[in-house]
Length: 153
Image (tube, rainbow, N blue to C red; front, side, top):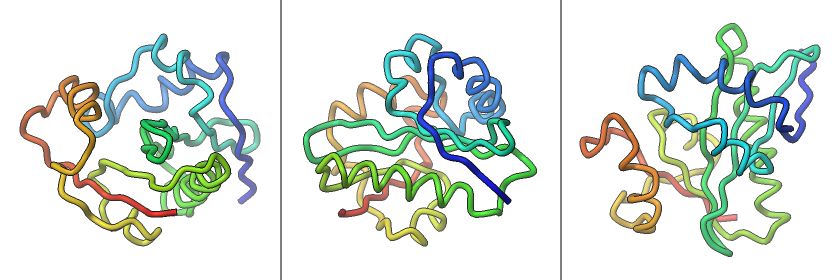
């Protein structure tokens, strides 16, 4: 299967929101407003198959040494084809090129990230601004079942 990976444009936001909506409604992915996505549009990498949006993720930079993988989504029917793995590897390459040292992920898909070299860390070790800026917006807060994982680059 031919998949193209490109940086997102502002004109992609509506398609991105439509793709991620079921996961947002179920509480698996944190809701982001159109304006929040627009503000962070440079963070997003898209996966396209024959011009159709089939997945995306974001590399959100927290500090000069730490970034986070956010909002990883692959369209039903395209899951299990290593597209998510390729997306993660794309953003990890981007993180390396920026000089970042570590990338974290908060996820319900622990084994997926562990296969890519991430290791579990205690949530308490996450930067405070991460917890209060994002987690408080989650429908599951403060009862969080997500696992914190990190990879050293």
